[in-house]
Image 1 (cartoon, rainbow, N blue to C red):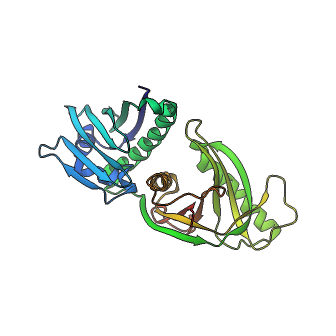
Image 2 (image 1 turned 90 degrees about the vertical axis):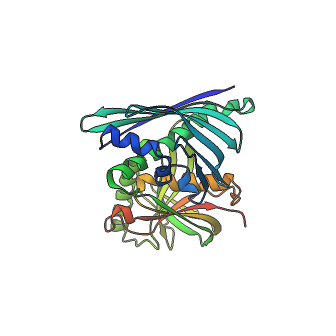
Image 3 (image 1 turned 120 degrees about the vertical axis):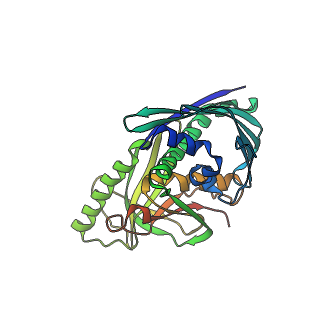
Length: 308
């Protein structure tokens, strides 16, 4: 059986006892789970002794988790059994290590895939690693602030009218995408000022490729325009998004947590909530201005082009 291993860590500003107790309480998991955020109405059940819980959903599939070792406040080991979409058993662990006046939390998984999915072991490690990063960030917010800042809504299929745009196409590390886009945005704003161009709509980000294993992304950050300029400075491009129907996921919260919306949209696609339309890349539309809006109130609409 093809094996895979995942390990991700984060530092939480709270005593190890507090962090351990929060993770150990399965009834707190819906507040920060990187999977349940994609289907908050999943059916959940909890064992009477508090050592296990089970889930069943159209998006999340079904399975159960059982604590097999609890050494507070140092360690929690669990047996994780997936029943749908395929059967698999993994061992997951949380390790809690005091770090200054906080706690370093490490979340691990050791598991295997069905033999016919041997080719997916690296991809599975990459995807679960990104899930763990999202989950640990939400756990940190849940414990430190009492609230997860990233929130999702699913308005479903909507019509997008299409647009012409001027933008910058680039490839960068997934870890550097925030700073890279900030630099690109500054250059686009400068071009608008120098050319006296007024965008016809808020900025848009188009994602051409996303490679979790290589941890790279290829994107275009752009301003929609009424008329495409005949000439542009080096590094800027003209482009067009066609009119299309899209499955929309609405994210409210900080831009670095947009991975929650993207992951949820892909999960909804795999669960056949919508059928993805090939040939048109997915894209983000930004509803409000980050220079004037608290990051917890930033609204981003992630669009997945869908078949009618």
